[in-house]
Structures are given as C-alpha cells and as structure tokens.
Image (tube, rainbow over all chains, first blue to last red; front, side, top):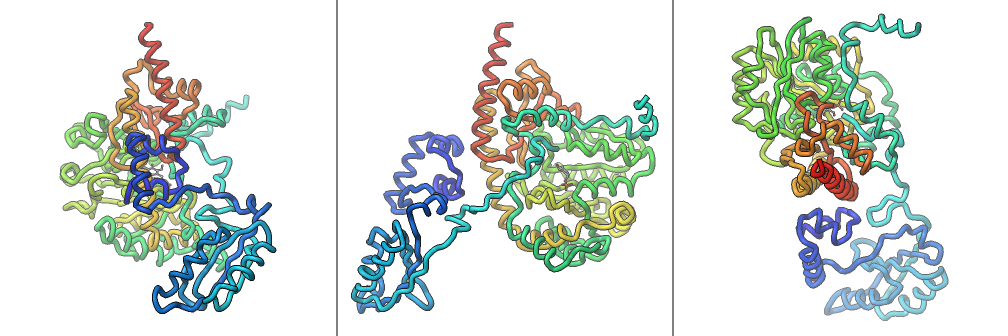
Length: 160
Length: 396
Ligand SMILES: Cc1ncc(COP(=O)(O)O)c(C=O)c1O
C-alpha cells in the first residue's frame, strides 16, 4: 500500500510536513503522492472526524432503508446515484438482505429529514418503500471510540 | 534510633543497589509536562478482544486458583504458539509452567537451579533485573560486556574469556533490552557450542522475540544439544501489550520445569486466572495485533534512528525490541548528566545507560514506545539541547 495512505489510515493526525518527516520523504514528495491518490480517485477528500455530540446541537442523523425496483439496464445504479446526489445524503450503499439501499442522511432537524423522505425520496419513480431510523446516540465514530480510554494517572513515566 | 532497624535486613538484600531507573523516575515524576522516552512497556492498550476475554471470564465466575502450572487450555495454547513461532515443541502437561510475568519465571528458574555461590554469566548492558535476581538467589552474577561496534550482540570470544570455574548458567536476552541487540544463527551456534562444552544451562529471555525487525529470530533452544539445557522464557507483556496482566511462561525439560514448579507453588500458587483467560485468547487469536504493533515500532525505529544520527547522536539501528541506544560520548557529559540536563533544559526523559550496568556508560536509552507526535517533538527538543551542549563545548 502507498506509505502515505497507510500512515493516514492508521489515524495518525499528522501534518504533511510531519508525514514527510516520519516517512523520511520531502514534503513536496508527500504532496505529490497525495495529488496522485486524488487523481486516481483513491483519496476522495479531507474531512475532520467530529464528535456527533458536538454536531447534535444543530444536526440530526438518520439511516433510511430504501427498497427500489431494479431497471433492465443498469440495475440499481442509476437510481442509487440519483438518490446519492441529494445534499442531505452523506452515504449511500447497496445492501444485501431485506432492503436495497442504506441511505445515511443528515439535516438541521427532524422535520427537514421527514420532508426529504416524503417529498424527495418516496416520490421518486422506482422507490418502492422507505423505513427511517433516527440516530439517538453515538458510541463510535469512524473508528474513534467516544468513551475515551485513559492510561491511569500513575502509569510510570519511566520504567525498566 | 530508628535507623537501627536496618540491621534486620539480610546482607545480600542490603547490598543490592537501588534501581537506577527508580532514581531517575523520581526526577521525571516531578515534571508532568516532560515527554518521556523512558517507558519500558508498549504504549498500546491491550487489544480489545483480549481484554474482553478477561471480562467474560470474570462474568463466568472464574475467580479461583488454577492448577499451579496454569490452566491446561493455556498451556496447550502456549505449546501450539511456541511450536509455530519458535519451532520448539514442549508438552503442555509437564514442560510448560505459567508464571506471573517473565519476572517471576526468571526468579524461580534461578532459585530452582542455583546452589549458593554458583556463578551466572549474562551480557551487559542488560535488563535491570538480571544481576539482582542472581544475587537474590545467592548466586554470583558475572557480566560480559557487549559493544556498540558489534551492535550489542554477544561476542563468543568475550563470553569464553569471562567464563570461570563455578559458572553454571548463562542468561541470554535477544532482542536485548536496552540495546536492541540480536544474535543471528551463526553467533548463537558458537554460543551454544560453548554452553555445551562448559555444561552451562541457558536461561533464554526471548520476551521481545516477536518484535524483531530484520532477519529471523532464532531461539537458542532449537540448536543442537540445547533443548535439554535451555529454559525458554517468554511472556505476554511486550508482543501482546499485556504488561499489566502479569503473565509469562517457562518451557523446558520436565525435570527443570518440575523444579521451578516447586518454587512457584510455594511462592505464587498460580498466575491470576483472569490473566490466564486473556492469555488464551491472545495466543490463539492475537497474531494480527502483534504484527500491527510490530510494524508501528518498526516505522518509529526508522524515524528515531535517522533523526538521532542526523543530529549528531550516533545510534546503531536496533534490530529488535523498542529501544534506541544512542551514544552520548561526543558531548563530554556522563550519561546521567546528559539525561538530567536534557530533562531539565528541554523536558525530555531518556534513561541513562548506566541504569543497565556499567557497560551502559556513554549511552542513553530512548524508548520509541510512544506516539509519533511525541517522538517528533522529543527529537526536535533533543536537537536543540545538543546545539546548546555543542556550543558550550566550543567555548571551552
Ligand atoms: C528483557 C526483559 N525481560 C523481562 C521483563 C519483565 O517482563 P514481565 O512483564 O513478563 O515480567 C522485561 C520488562 O521490561 C524485560 O525488558
């Protein structure tokens, strides 16, 4: 795996300059690697991982299970992409099992999500049914545990 | 006169030096904002699935003593693991003893094997416990110096030169704390031949074996004539990041394990059952975690060693464990003074090499068992400190 990518995936919060230090490359090389990863469509972008409790002040999240009817050509892809394009949709996946698409949406409040489901999603030709689940509390966000673990205060700073 | 009670302390205990690490720790403890490169244990928390196994055992009411040797399931897991990763076959029934860390295993091995006055050779700089453990078992510890020019591997010629009548045992520790030294097969073969020739029993502390970055780790017990005279010591502390569980084990020929078992049953009874449950999970399913952590140490090692060399702190590349052991000889300071001033002036803690024996003079131990951000910052600060010291030296 690309070393720059690997370092980022390990969740080390390092600046480009620090990555360059650690990987013993120069900063320009790291920038170039990052540009290549972007050009290849491997690295989609940057976003800080925020604590959902912080976001909860003015955002609500919901998972929507959507059943859709596949089309003769393209299967689920055309409709899935169409749904994914709405700005409220954060993630959209085709699933195996009882429904077809799992759509993760966020909005300022519950009413906005309801409006999205009734006015946008459910009215699309090809959408058979929806089931909306609101997120109540987060325990882990993109690999970060919210109940943080702390080393005991008396862990020796120097040991054999 | 309250001092008077000192007279009750046994002579061989009274004569033990205090651990140099403890002295240094007292200084660091007063500096909460110092970056510590002094830590002798993994910075990783024990992988969750292993911790979860201990919790499950607790829920199941596993709160009792176990067989003195440890749970049979654990000994079976140890047997399988050691065979797979060390090419050593030991019977779970009578050739494996579960202990409270390698610390206990080493202690009971020495107590089980030494008659008063027996001599034990070990290579030095070394882990801080070897010399005192031998003394506590009424033996006489004989250090053999290893050197930076030899990447701190044990030189068989020096070993032979250190031998004297009355030598009964040899303690080996590869990869080595604090130097990161390793011994390759060719070297171990020479050491093994010497052990056979002099009829030495070898206590092989291989606690850092999994954290070998280059070359294969070879256990001396696999070499001709060695299995019958080797006690293989290993544990969960380092590779599995389980120091707080206090779990280790000793493998060896049945009569030796039986002798150790006698000491163990009277002084310890058994290792804690919850730790044993966690150990089973770790040995069966923890290999991926071990590799993930090793890779991290490996990257950090590459970084810290090249930074040290760039800033003029000569440092060999340790081939195992998680310690760099740079030389500070160019700066006209003893390793203790270097470490103390670095701590006071730049708030970075490293352990003076002399904590690991006189052979550590002129070196400091820098543990890379800490996160990148800390290591980077520490390196920046050390570089600043070196500039100050070099400028002073220039003025003189
Ligand atoms: C070389 C060596 N042996 C043994 C130990 C003790 O390990 P345990 O936690 O298994 O008692 C250590 C710990 O630092 C060590 O470095």
